Length: 235
Image (cartoon, rainbow, N blue to C red; front, side, top):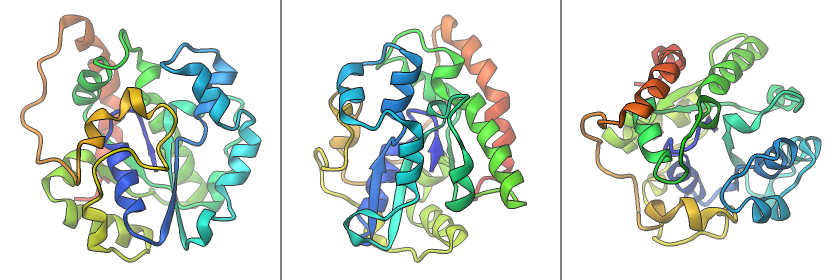
């Protein structure tokens, strides 16, 4: 699953983990991304120390074997982590899906956790690029799901996503226990406080947030990339 940050991505990982037949991996390329770029992220040293820093090793592990002898393997990927120079050949051998969210909601949420985000920080450009690359590899558009659709009707949205991925849907995906999870990345204390308080998907969101002027330009920059994927979204 390819998304930017603050896209409902952790809740989706929890939903798949709750199935009972699915191993999950939280942001496989995060350590490699930080090691390669030197960017200053919250808990940077802990993230690098806890993960695989060789992107080729990460890609190989994404192909299996599946941990815990499960039948499915859900990988929560951040699009911004796939920087130039990271081999994307493994994408041909996995089922790819894309999780999107309106950039105004993403920027409003992200800016509360890390100040002064840039367009590359929120992953919209990279998401569109990856979408095009996967579509070219497989000869058709991969599944896209919008967070607003999930929160409006989680059961219907996840059932349609599972159908598109040719896997069975189960109602177990709709709920999970509150609190930290063993599959959380080491960065969870900084980013996951809201989802740790949840036991399922939140209610539908209201109007788009009213952002400070310094962030409106960022939303305007990201919006065309979101709108490119939106027509492919499962409805």
